[in-house]
Length: 96
Length: 486
Image 1 (cartoon, one colour):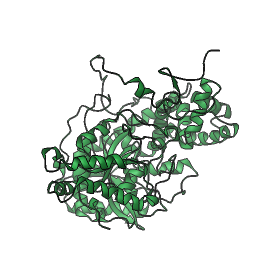
Image 2: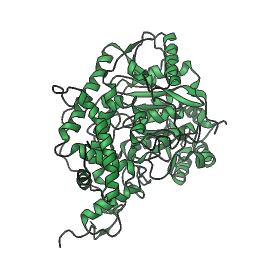
Image 3: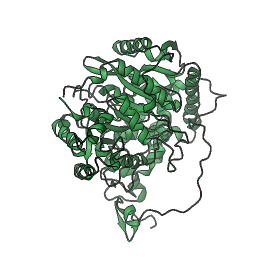
Image 4: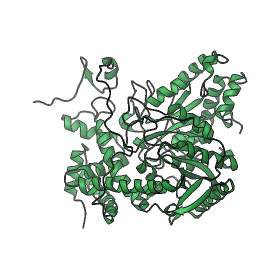
């Protein structure tokens, strides 16, 4: 039994914003299936009463004073933008 | 082949101080060596020769004054290409950042400026640090200086190979699942992954934020300690950098390991580890015993779950971190997109390499609705068990010792067909990242002319003991004195 279908793979690719051909989707279905079945090794372990670790150090919220600092100059920020106009970053129109 | 870089930092510092050499000499040594061997090693993605030479000239005027007193003053360094450097192209070895020109410096880069090292260039890696061989670089495959048919390891392959080849005195790498220690092992150099939080990650292009750490790659343990000293410490720009005192690491290099209690996990010498690797570790333990340390076999019972845990967690974090590469604010953008969403999808499909896409897919899946608890949260829970394995052992022992990698450097192309066999290379280094503790790889032998590495793992924020043991071992052996015949 496959753990993931080609339709699921296409859905995940959409969520990840990755364009994918039919052929690629097929290949990913196989590869992901392998990786997921490998990951299912973890199901051997009973973790019902184990707390998850998202961070290894015992740190609480790290806060700083809410004080404005100088931002980056517009010219610098736009320097790496693929397309810009009048100080704005340009993308294809999103409203018809 | 005699090189200025056969000297340690402290010796070069003395030579500069006595005006027997200049900073220009050091920088020239780098670029001369690069011109001789780089076509074989392929460690660099970008060189910064003009600026480096200019800086050297200015610094030469300061020699003999108080301004040249810093130990790292004038020392030529290479920087892994996922560490942003203002005005110096930074690609993370990805086509999606091929022309990226950073507008700020990573904290470690600022710290290097303050220490007045000279950046020679940016070093090749697996794309976004995802890989163990440098074969996943979007641009070139770095070669192992000991045998150019072999991989240098990864993902900090360029960082390790450039040091081993004598192209730079030392370098910075980053380690998410072994990416400093494994290439250090494969290339016969010293590489340390600091405790999570020891070094600021600000300006490190993020792969897996709960695991990534920047660390030094050097020829000797002493130099490693000096370089870590320069980059460590709390940083207001990284909320995960730790507010913990940074001791003087050089002071820990006493050579004294009498009474040291070493734990050797049986899982680290089990099936799958080459016999020669196993033997080199047992020989190393004999050396440390002679120096007065004792060792016992222990168990890290959840070791076999580390790899699956790591791939779920690191891929999940990567899928979120790499969402920023969308062709809008910086980096590559696809030509003629039909819509904004088409722009995102095509840009990412064209800009990312296969391994990166594979991990984004796995991570997106593991975080998606309906699967989050079964995969991502499950892995976070197993991470707790792995971390507790280490805590238990460290109640009774000072360090944990084992091999860095199960084999010496493999052949280019040997492990590319199945991602899972490639991943298995990191089986001995990954648990260390999951637990967040520090680990070093030091040269401990050779197999068929290829270097082997000994891994020494310490308690949280106890890099000092890790260095003390690594240094004592290094001083009692000759492995670190050998150089590739390149």
